[in-house]
Length: 149
Image 1: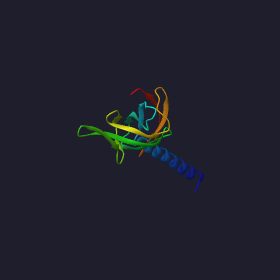
Image 2: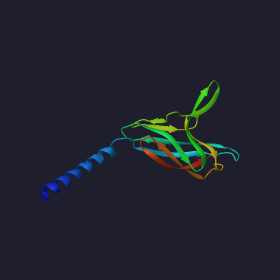
Image 3: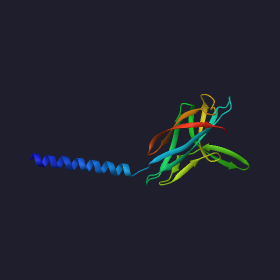
Image 4: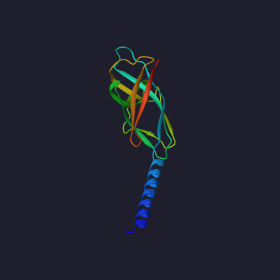
């Protein structure tokens, strides 16, 4: 093969790689999280909750499938619901959908991140690190400010 053909082939393959990489980055979910905050917890509390606004600026839906934090032994995505006159909560099975081009707000009385078996109380003014885990976007680290309930 001549040198000119080899260079042309290499240039073509390089260009094709760049185009394919750009297409992959342009599609999918583009997750951002803002206004992350957690509720303060009483001294003896074993659980806590945190809230956040999640935006998917991509063209594919994604799912919040879990979370992790050094502040608690177990971290789960939960939803609050009414049963009769009583507010209850449960883990979200299969993850929480974040629609393409959409925003989901985790807030008191709705979806939230449950911190179970706290390592220490969540004190007003402190910050904890939480990593949200998405099916497509992967891990999204957050710094969560603890506020008054």
